[in-house]
Length: 94
Image (cartoon, rainbow, N blue to C red; front, top):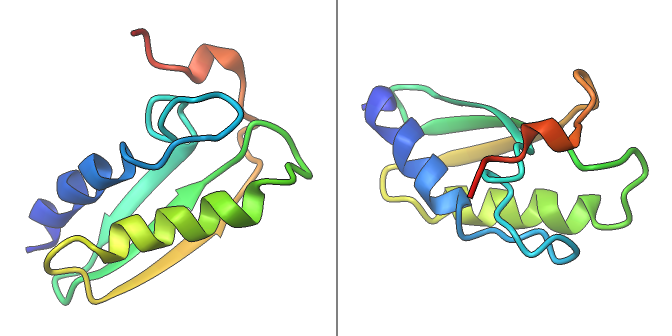
């Protein structure tokens, strides 16, 4: 089931918008990895546009809530990283 959960979680994360940029965390390239276990535990590695972003806690919580709402997800862990550093080149083309 984990192979099916990862794309479903990614779709759910498209509804999480960065309030300053007005685009989803996925389209901005802020989601580095989504890994799911067969039991439904999901680990997400993400970043913010800058270190010390005042919205980091909000974004992390919103990502966890969106992922947790996916059917089959039993637990969510969101890890914030700054390696590699985010840059505008990571934004998906519209």
